[in-house]
Image 1: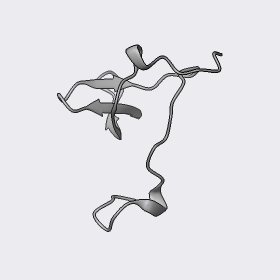
Image 2: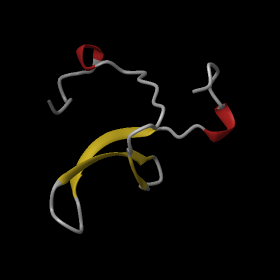
Image 3: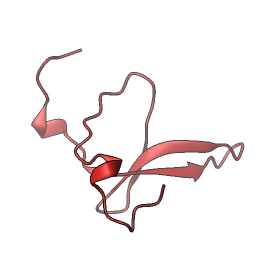
Length: 61
């Protein structure tokens, strides 16, 4: 794992859970501003910039 982030390859979005199209289980991923869904996979690096206790009342918990 690298110690420094790669800003050129960074992806920004919101974490969501959605049903898998194959078997129906829920998978976790990121939806980008353009609506693209990117599934999170083991080994991916992530950076959390908003903590749940810092989000507003409209946050789904």
